[in-house]
Amino acid sequence: MSKKLQRIAAVFMAVMVTVLFVPVSVYASDEADSISYKTDAGKEVTFKGKDFNNVCDDLMDEELDYVEFTLPSSTKGTLYYDYDGSDEEKVTKSDECYYDPGKNDWDLSDISFVPKSSYSGTVTISYTGYDIDGNSFTGDVKITVSKSSSSGDLEYEVDSGDDVDFDEEDFNDYCQDENDEDLDFVIFTSLPSKSKGVLYYKYDTKGEEKVSDDEEYYYDSNPSIDDITFLADDDYSGEVTIKFEGEDVDGNSIKGSVIITVGDGSSSSNLKSAKDITYSANVGTNISFDDDDFNDVCDALTDNDIDYVKFTLPSTSNGILYYGYTTGGSSSTKVTASTKYYYDEKPYIRNVTFVPNEGTAGMITLQYTGYDTDGDAFSGKIKLTYKAANTASLYFSDVKGDYTWAVLYVDTLYSTGVLTGSGSGGTSSYNPGVNITRGDYLLYLYKALNLPHNTSAGSFSDVPAGSTYYDAIASAKALGIAKGSNNVFGVNAQITREDAMVLALRAMSERQRHGICSGRCQFPVNLHGQRKDF
Image 1 (tube, rainbow, N blue to C red):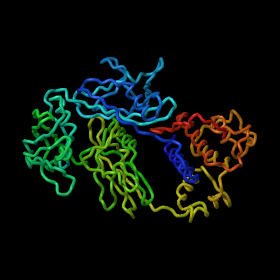
Image 2 (image 1 turned 90 degrees about the vertical axis):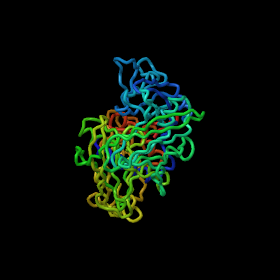
Image 3 (image 1 turned 180 degrees about the horizontal axis):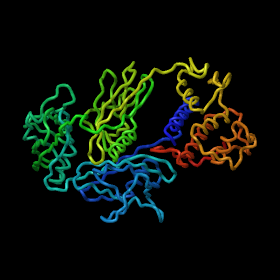
Image 4 (image 1 turned 30 degrees about the vertical axis):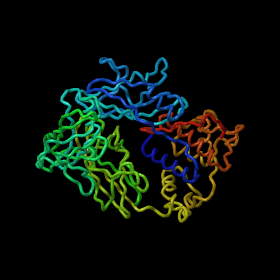
């Protein structure tokens, strides 16, 4: 399905849900607790099907059927099926991995993650699970990968002039590897030269202070290791070594070093430039990014998937970039220039939203640097166009005033041929206050979702061949979307909210089953065993 038709479908669904004031949600996706594993660099770890089933049972109160994984970055490792070190088969994002597999199905307990021999850290692999009733939920697998060498150095990366935060879990994992015990505290015994950078405590708050070489920083209390930040000097690139000593919770000593690799901060002018990513919206509208847009421009430029991006922050006079934005911004955080936002693990690119200032109009250009799965960098631009919203329809004289909220949707559906209207030339009146009939609704649904044409089964007795609704209703009947009662559809009857949502749900399911839905579109159907003719 083309992007144009996808937009039409999205607008249609928005109109129907808003107009009908549906009081309940027809689809909900729950998020599960993380499943955790540990392994060493280069050494595989095999998943346990019962871990996923336990999550499903706790969350959905039902047994697990199968899961589909979002693949990890290839720079960190690979998911395999029935891994034995040779002739292994890679897992793809469309593979269904079953808890109780049939003869030809993949067994979830035969899925293994093999980290790169050069990688250490935490890998997050997202998945979508489906219980045996077809209900879906989302979750992730967190795999802690320890260094395979005995040096035990902790490693971070940052660009010149940027900052990087220390993670107390990295220090605790190192202590566990060395002493088989949790960490209590560390002291940074060799601070970096000022020409390379500065260690700060609580760098992102007012009254920040430099780290002292005789202060104890703790794993599970304050002052916390998590509040330590290294700020690289604007003119330095290379390696920075910071040594530390400390104790575990039993009082045993520990020593180590943090190695920070500072990039040269090459300007975007020295990098390949990707095709612009463009969005448009009415003035005052928040714009959330689509990670597939970033992946598409990366693939076109480098022939690789994107791994992550780093954003250059916009002028605050235009607006602010947020991560995980919610209305009012109470649970969201501001995007930082040093944070990596990933395609396939948290923090996700798709959770980044631009929130414009009041009155921001015209084109806003945002800069970003992208990195593909081979680690190659490129520069890119995001162009946001803000235009004033129409307060009256361009086509219908009666869509204004109390119906200003519907102008954009109604005009979009008219301009794309989904609806027509009535009156002189077919465009003078839309009659927004008139209840919609079952025939009109299904005709709009048929056009908006581009449903397959299939009149082989005929239609209902009240929808004769050659009538306005014949093709739409006959096709819906053949696809199992419209069922009717006693071979009557009730074409001229007013449609109820319940019927409208059931028809839409069935149509979306058929849209996906016939491959019309692309990308990450998922619309699982679950009527909890209840059946009704519509």
